[in-house]
Length: 95
Image (spheres, rainbow, N blue to C red):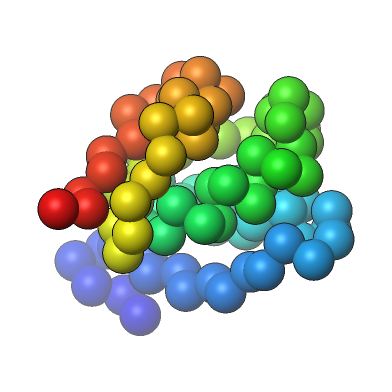
């Protein structure tokens, strides 16, 4: 869907194998995704599969600006991991 020159990419990925975690960063890189809105479960799965963020370093994420997390409480360790790995802000919208 194209709205005001923004592309909306909807992806449902469950971390059943390393391939799926790689697919997440491939989609972000290929489509030049600037931000992601997701449940913290997605980033917990990415952290579990790639604890040292080695896979995400293989992709061009220079256009990536940040992550919006909602739907459930995000644990501080996952937020810290994502912020350190991405070097971008993680906004927890859980209230």
